[in-house]
Length: 106
Length: 106
Length: 106
Length: 106
Image 1 (cartoon, rainbow over the protein chains, first blue to last red):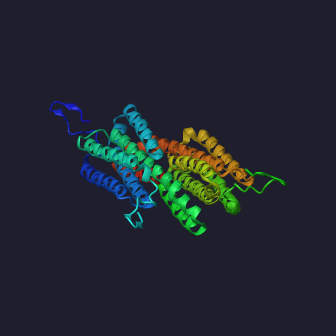
Image 2 (cartoon, chains in turn yellow, red, green, blue; image 1 turned 30 degrees about the horizontal axis):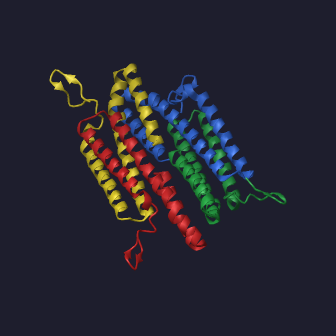
Image 3 (cartoon, chains in turn green, brown, red, yellow; image 1 turned 120 degrees about the vertical axis):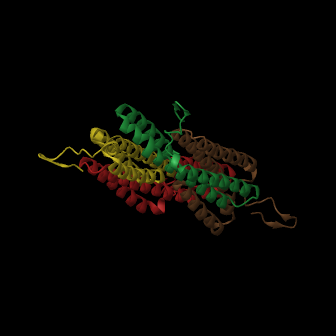
């Protein structure tokens, strides 16, 4: 996101995962490889149950990244907004709750 | 899997998704692209909630592929084993149940 | 469901959980008690996180019953229909797939 | 939880769901009835798929209560701790993250 500062776009003060960006990126690269590997298994006519197990593993890996990002978001963006005041805090809390609900249902 | 026939490996009689292979592959390619897109969002410091929403979407897409493969597996591999006899049928049913449990928990 | 026989409704030949009925009932009674216990925790103003943990436990217990019923259904109702013929088998398989999808998404 | 005040235990300042207690209790009573209704369905040999659908509905209802409690917890207990200071805030955030993870996996 970044906000416009006198020096142009800042270093993304609203990005909760700033400190974990490299870890998150490494995990996403790994999941991308997992999904590519699953496609290869399908091309090779690998047994359904083996493909399903890899799909379950990739799903869990995606959820783990989502939980990591959510924690970073709560600990940074939401916590900052809460300290700023009730109006900013409540808006961020509502937004986070909606994202948690989508995550639980996905 | 495939079984050895006089002509070499057969057209994978035990692969339940044989008829849907192209559809499944197309979906997996799309999910691979989604995951790459999420990595790009992280590189661009996109807002946490927007990244989380894309992670939820990719998770749901992976689960949809898993459900598709599972249906194909039940309708082909498991149904064939059930028709073959109780021993083959029960083994495939146990295996499918375990895969369903992993899917529900992932 | 039960089917009409010369003697009236039969002992539910289409109920896959017939042999496990007592186990399933015992588990459901236990979950009913868990939910009542959670209500009591709320009445006693117990800490949110402790209540949440019990909600997660009850949710997992409900899913375990659902997986048990689903296995029984596949091993009995669906397997019987598959042996009966493609028309009966395919209808039951479609129905089971839809139930699995609802379970994965719940 | 409640804290000791000159008048004894206070009205549970650390219970995030204080304002929603009646709504939460009404929902839990309803879910308790749903689970009892499912047991009755099993006693009546109702069709597996119908029982499974009610199990999915009860599971979703439990998750909805959990999401409600979690939102209340974030908006009250966690927000208060964040305003109190980094040490209190971080502890509550860690605890909430662990509860969210258990919820996503349940």
